[in-house]
Image 1: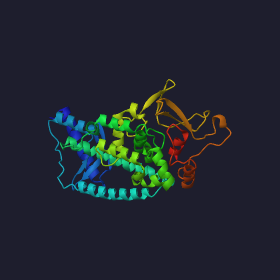
Image 2: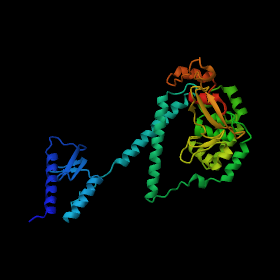
Image 3: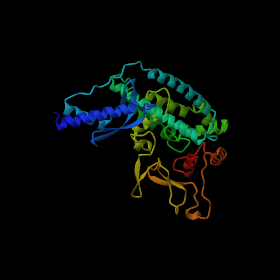
Image 4: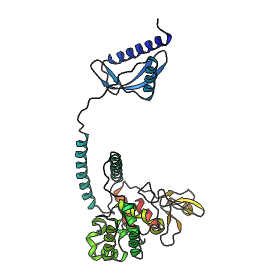
Length: 379
């Protein structure tokens, strides 16, 4: 004679078979269909999905709730449910990934070549810039993940961490050698170069101001923006030496955002005049300082109140005085100009954007401590 517990177990097993039969008898069950499995008289209800459909069976995904239930069921009845093992089959995802990366590199090279022909004054549409940023971020995430997985799997990581490989004293000597020169944006020359690669994208900030003016006078405003600095190295001996010595100290063959970020972290905020957060490659977004007794974020524009002048304000540290100051920019019709119209930025209008950048000479926006710099950056 069956005990109450055995009777309950039999009832549950019958319910399981009945539900699976119902699922299997559906006209066209599909992998991924959602179903509810009910066991016993309101004993348990498990929501799950169909994982695989066989000739005479349906396999469902078991979540934590289902596994816990089955574990208790096995304990009560002293039995084990058979686990299904997937058949091994060749995985073509690696080859697919290689193919995708090959085409990605070709497309990236083509886009890079196209952008070389577009000046800052002409600019690109906002949605294009947004897609490029997302693509870059996605690839960085995949790269970091694969690097971590390879290290966990025991692969040698031949790339020594930059912080360990770079001689800090040599990097400081490089900075001190060129800090008395002024960059085209008014920063100390090496700070302008680092900031240009990490934050602004204005690489001419890393050009010595007198050399920059000579090139601009001979070849025009857009020359360095369109072609970069290297084609003009013959006219820029100070700029050339600083860039070449930086690559030698960092042990790299070209200057980019990553090695400039590492250099800024190694040198520290006291030397370069700005902070780089450990968990980000952007300036200021996680760096704070005191302004009139209040903790503020540096380099992060925020909207002003309706009764304040200017549409935006941003807190920056003056590289010369090391003091924090507030810079207001943009016109919102508030403060002293309450009767005038609000400035409306329309980046999606190429003509307006080009006109604005030309009027404000945004190819050479000046130092970060001035409103024009931030207005140009917004456009």
